[in-house]
Length: 291
Image (cartoon, rainbow, N blue to C red; front, side):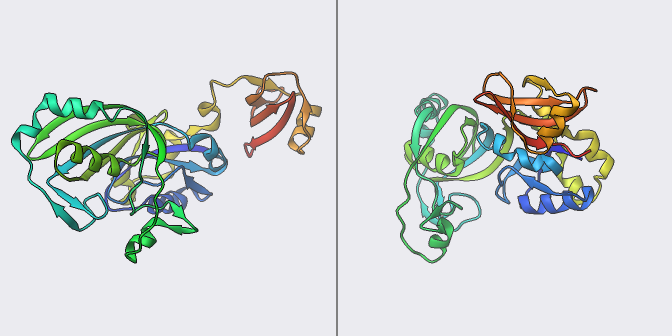
């Protein structure tokens, strides 16, 4: 079994927990393309078999989230898991829909964002949260991100729900805190649901609650598996004859005059072999699907 499944990750479990459960079901190597915090829910792409080798093609995917901002309190982790470190009033006139929409619009576009101290980013070989837990100060450098759009979904009981489409590397916790400050108060990310990662969305996901309850079987995973061939269906096709295929599988680079890029490789019987890379008219083996 080689490819990707999409899990709708529930709350209070880690991405690693999901990987371990799937691994027990499929009995082969399993990985993921990036963690979701235990308190977050939603799209978690899980790589199976030779699919674990395609993570390098998936890490730059754009993402979409539904986030709930709780106004009036700030936590040390910028989410609901942390302890409250500051409180401020929230005036009713600040929560005018037109005003909030104008503020949200100012966060769209390319920008520099400072990641939260409670994150896994490494500085001088240590993760930021390790410094935070010891109360140590550390210089956190901003990172380049892009917010494509922020749509206001609702305002109720000092809580704002937003739909955010953004680039890889965007910290929604930091965004929620920054939005709160621009409104005139403080706030933290109360809820986070990831609804899309690249082309992976919730519509094609496996229920994570059922997975935790052991209600998902091997047949269910096979039925919802997105194969490597499907994932790269938009890439051009190269058919190799028996001799060329043998050389290719042995790691020999083949001379083929084509544009640089990723190609789907097939044998003469139109059986899918995997992914190859062409660079400077040389075809190199990348991912081979086990038969």
